[in-house]
Length: 139
Image (cartoon, rainbow, N blue to C red; front, side):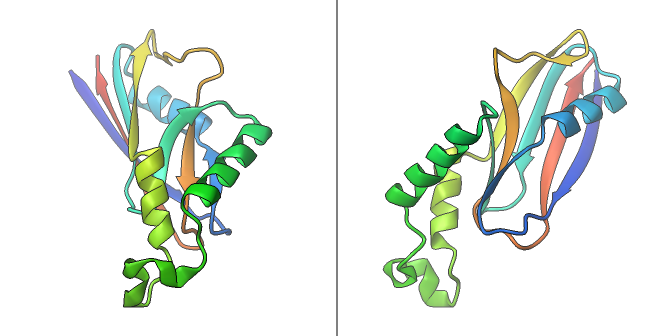
């Protein structure tokens, strides 16, 4: 069994964004040489997420509206975490909703997706560099 590890560095200029990282994951898979196995992709920061969904702008808008209704950024004082001087309590909660990581099967050297599936980095408290771990295992 072989393993491959790579870090992607993300720096989103806005507080929140959804970034399609599928091509970067496919490039890492190609570098790994692994033909059959599993690919783990996870956000290495507590206010960011990795998830799988469709790359459709209307859907991404709907995600944003849903999250802001469910866990609004403001008023900032509504969150105890922000009593520490932070203003990102909502980002921590949004990350819990969208999740930390995804695992995708690798078949014949390709990510084994269903129709329309893509891998996204979800940023909920941007404007600084954050890491995404790609760990691939298999043969």
